[in-house]
Image (cartoon, rainbow over all chains, first blue to last red; front, side, top):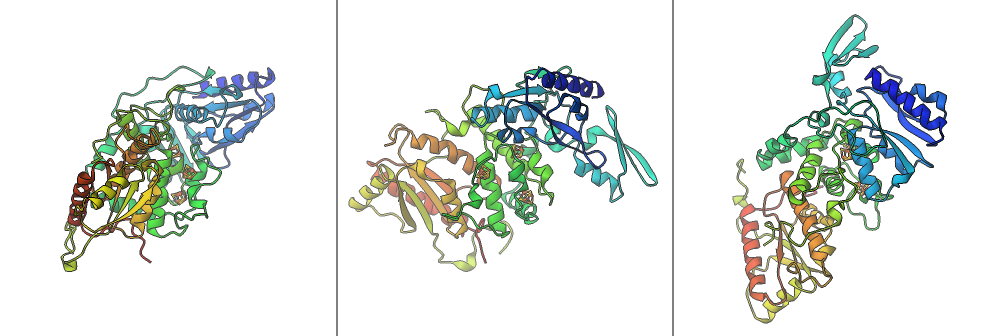
Length: 315
Length: 149
Ligand code: SF4
Ligand code: SF4
Ligand code: SF4
């Protein structure tokens, strides 16, 4: 990690001083312990601000749509897949970006850290390769990083960026696992149980739309929930309206969502609907053999069709 | 009502309300043919004519459920017969994911259905409507996504 951070800064400095890019989007230290935040760097000597660690949680591809000029961007495995999607959907031009790929061993879920702290104040956090040391008034404890990983990261099989112009450090091995075992387990529950789960989760939703606003795939100038002619769905926190918002968002991101987990991380109410996104991801993979964001050639699955697509569900 | 029981027996005599989105060129003409041929089918369906099954936005379906209909049927031309060449094929992918997500969220299988019915299939139209009505009757009144205020 430390090594990669050093390489990252060097690479960024070189890119800026060679005038290969106008700006670099990366991460810098946040104001709270164990937090990072996005940073936009334009001067070579500012590159020492850049950090790379297990708390670089934002999906930076989000900023590509508004960035001007030639943009260098730090991209983890999932970010790179989002970038591939954005290029395919013609939201960014390949030649306008320079991807600084970083193999990613997984991001720590700060909500899991909060759980570990049980209300105690975190004053300092130090990260090593496998552990995090949490310090505060009257306590200092160690936690294994493995146990703190975000749920999207525990089932991620694309840790290495699929597309990059330069790679920081070495590729890391991709884990072999059934990435959809949680979806299958959930599917095996009864209708009622699943319905109750989604109702419980969305009952906390305050319709702040942070999940939509932070998602790199949700870039519509006018979202369906904001439309007023016609007003499709109510903007009330009524359970039906809220459920529908989340359901339709899942449909809109089907075949485009890379399971980066940003939407669940930004939620102020801890609404956890990642399973819904994963279900859509699994469906497009099984039905249409499409793996989101893994190549630049294939058309997005919902923008195309084949004459022999499965249709068992049609009478 | 007991747990696991979907039909509210207290509401005996209840009849489902079903919305059918039929494409102008095939399924709607199929329904016409059924009518002209004096074929009987349950009166539970309310037909909405749309230009093509590809015109059916999932919003239409979910909005229908939100308003409290008990079932939705979307019907279009058989693959290869679409008046707009491939509107039904685009729709097929969209509905496949929609139906899968709907059922994953806990909506009963069969609440929302899809079919291909051509303009020549009057007989088949009445058959499909019978089947769909029976299946939705067995599920009982639609409750999920209904917006009660
Ligand atoms: S829906 Fe959520 S997990 Fe999927 S791409 Fe958007 S932010 Fe990431
Ligand atoms: S939820 Fe749908 S309409 Fe709204 S921004 Fe996302 S993709 Fe666009
Ligand atoms: S971020 Fe959370 S509370 Fe806000 S709209 Fe999304 S799910 Fe609801």
